[in-house]
Length: 413
Image (tube, rainbow, N blue to C red; front, top):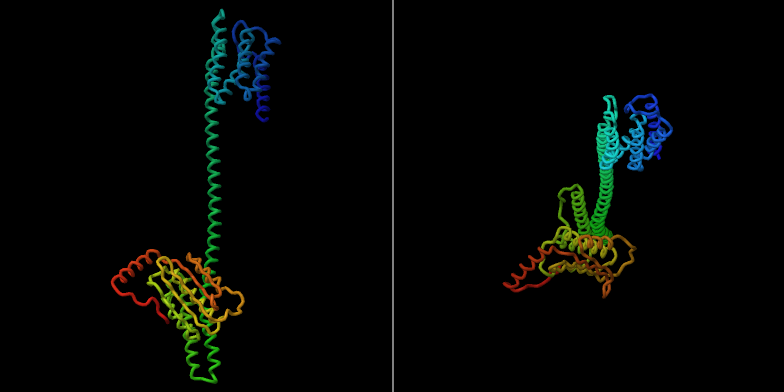
């Protein structure tokens, strides 16, 4: 709508300018000019008003303007301004990228006009502006091409700027998404660290505090009847407190990104754990079957913590019981079994079993817990072993068995 309104104003302005220039005798086409009459005014009006359609139908508007101009000059009407609408149409065609149409329209205007000049009885005078028509036609095509090139360049610049703006917006969005992802990852890591700390403190402190409670109750019971045995209970309490401090120090060492101090929790510390449970009054049978081999640190630690929590539950809920702690080394997995023959107990729901199962699943294993077939309670964990380490251990064990006589497959504590 804006372009059509502009073209209409241009057409009206061209009509006024052509009328003014013609009536003012600002140009001259030769000695045979005739006065401008209604027919000449109609030709000028049609040629000028065709510019209102120069962008919607440029070729048709140009043909109409050129035809009106040729008829105008053939009728010897005065002034050269009647060709101005055709020149404007040629410029528009070139500016719109229709170079061939612009050239053919220029030829269609130039040939008849120069034909009329050639057929004239007198040669064009020096002041006859019609002789300059070819220069104007070439100039319109060239200026139109320059305008088209400049518009194409500006359009390309705008597209590049828009593309750069879109890329900048996309990069900003990716940066915001990355920031959100980092924040979510940080929150997830913080949650995982809190869970790990809670599990470590629960597994280590609960076991130690249970042993301390049992020993303290035993000391209070023996204080009047057998005071000489109170010293043993107090020594066990002291040892349990010392080991709790070591485990807390190790946990804090891991949190500080340093090397944990004290004994590392693993199956190598299982005899010490069994001894502490026996000191608290449990009867524990510790067996190892298969050929022991090195486990990944996280698997070794998970096995130790599961055994620790299982013994803690026996101390807290099963009463006086016989406990079996069995470790079976296979080529692809380690099976840890802790079972007792005590009472099931009446403790409410806690985090012990959940924590044990989470530890097993975290290293790619599994855990089952429930009442045993002959009473009591059984915890059974299957944890993956390092494949290469297990294969090496199995190969070494096979070589040893080939050379020596095999011994017993288990040891009782």
